[in-house]
Length: 205
Image (cartoon, rainbow, N blue to C red; front, side, top):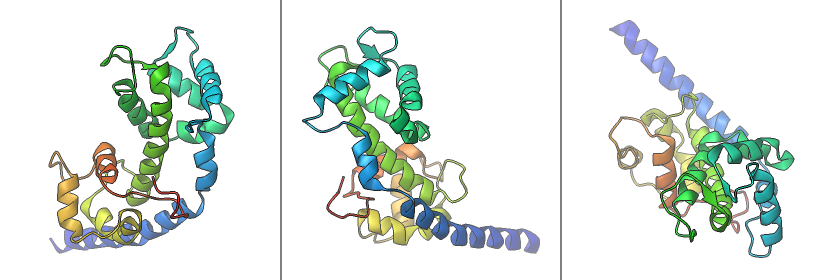
């Protein structure tokens, strides 16, 4: 029993130390202004969006399947950073294909032209959520344990503001009661907050 307890304490210590370093590295290496400019989400960037949609639409049927989005992000030179964040673009695709932006069928498995801008906006936000998730997930097992969430509390507060009780907040986020936070659960929680991860506080999501 003593040996087991020592192993647990050592793990907690390692996670606590590494978590802070990972968060600092993640945030310091990202130029958020550059990331924001990679995707044509603005109201005056319609022509650029049309060209990007055409590049993604390899089947040329006027709508995008997930594999076309994945392929487009992979081979479009400036968008590779989003391809590397697979959970982010998959979440953005899921949000966009069923959005109210579409004048076509809802509930299908495609992103139509009217949904494309919403997809890009969702991709940008999901990418920021993904980077935040990755920083908190110190063990890199694609889920956030309670100890990781508690240790990352100072960083999380900079993103979402005051947290009264980290353990209680963790339980709220863990919607399915699995004992850890999954990416979609974390995203849903961030979306409910005044989430901003950029260095410039004027660029709030």
